[in-house]
Length: 366
Image 1 (cartoon, rainbow, N blue to C red):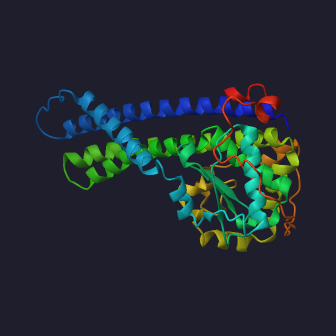
Image 2 (image 1 turned 45 degrees about the horizontal axis):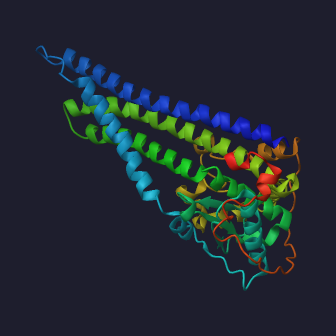
Image 3 (image 1 turned 90 degrees about the horizontal axis):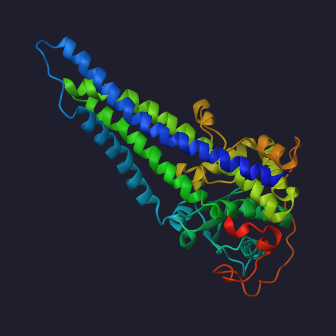
C-alpha cells in the first residue's frame, strides 16, 4: 500500500469537500432568499392591490438564515463538546481492566506503544462488553476528552498484529482531529436542518406564513440533503486517511487488512446475529455510528447512499492493492503480557525524539 499517496489524496479530497460544504451554506442562504422573493412575487400577483416590496428584505432573509445555520451549529457542538467519555458510556463502554484480563492488558500495552510512536497523549481506553462484533471507535473534542473504545469481539478474535492495526486506525482519527471535524460538520448539518424545520413551523400557519414557510422548506431540504451528502463524503475520506496512517504506523498491511477481512467473514457467516447484536447495544446510536471502525449494517437504500464509511471491499482493496477474500473468525489465544513501565499515560515527553520522528521525519508537522 502506498500510504503516503493515499494520505495526500484523502487530505486533498477533504479540503475540496470542505470548500464545497462552505459553498453549499452560501448557496442555501441565497436559495432561501430567492425562494422567499419568488413567494412574495407570487403572493403579490394573487392578492388584490399593489403590495410594495419590503424594505430590508435581503438583509432580513440572510440574517435569519445565518442565525439558524450558525445558531444550530453552535448549539449542537456545545452539546457534543466535552462528551467523549459520556458518549462512550452511552454506547455501553466501561473502563479498561488490564489487571484482570490478559486481552485487556494486551490492549493497554498496544495503546501505550502506538501513542509513543505517534508522539501523542494517551486517550482514555474503554471496552464495550457483550458485543461480539469486531469494532471500535474514537471520540472526543480534544486530547483531554479523547476516548478509544474497543468491542469485546475485537479482543476475542484479533491477534496482536491485527489489534495494533485497529488501534492505529482509531488513534489516527484522534491525531488528525477527525473526531472534532466530524462533530463540527454534524453541528453544521443540524443548523441546515433547522432551516427546514423553521419553514415547516411557518407552514402550520395560514396566510402569508404558509407561502413563506413553503419556500423556506424547499430551500432547506435541498441544503440539508446536500450537507448530509458532503458530511458523509468527508467522513469516507477520513476513513481512507486513517487506514493509510494505520499501515504507516504499524508498517503492516496484514494488521488492519486482517481486521477488515475478519469483519467481512463475520458478516458473511453470521449476518443475522451480527445485526441483532448491534440492535441491543449503543453502537447503533446515530451519534456513534459515524465514529466506528466499520459501519453498522442495515438501513434503507437512501441511508446506504449517505454512508459515512467506504465499503469493506474497497478498503481492503486499497490496503492490499488487490481484492482479498474474507477470513473466518475464531477465538485467539492471548498470551500474558506484563504491564509496560513508564506507560505513556500523559503522552511522550516534550523534546525527546520519538519513534515516529525516526521513521517519518515530517511526523512532528502532521
